[in-house]
Image (cartoon, rainbow, N blue to C red; front, side, top):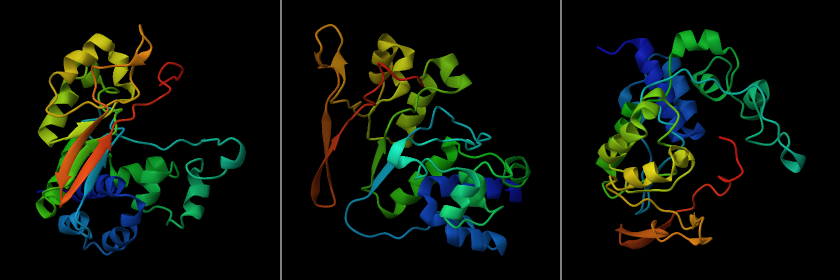
Length: 245
């Protein structure tokens, strides 16, 4: 039987995936101790096309302790603007309730105390549960991954990304682009790409020797869903040569 702590942990994970707009009602239900998994997985369905976009998993296959930073300094006109707002300023800007699941997930305020209540966050089992729930209602939903997925954990280091490739295939991912996947090196990326059940897109990935677009990765892929033809273009992280992960 799931414990209250595990349930709150799943609530925070689901909230982070669905976005801040889904927090309010869940917080009220949680406070009343009437929140159910069905409440967490319920969403408004409309239109004829649904996209499930997952990104920046950082190979965290299991739930982790995740603490938002105390500093995020914006430069120039973006100073003091999202996403360069943290802590109490973030709580005030978005009118969050201190001590609530959303305050725990989105700020560092009272992290240690709230961590004892809400537990760890994330985990690919939670992601899979949400994808499965959406697919049950919208079977034609397209599952996309924005990269920063293969690296960042001990298991990904030990398997050189193999664990996350296996998970992405099992999840039913239908297309992805890259970010710090390239920290494994070009040869390893090629080995992993060959194992994918879906295209690895990158219209801006260049061949370093000839300084021209690489022919090894498609720029885009097509889907026909909901009576429409949909193009998905892969834009890999453009500052890899000069950025620090």
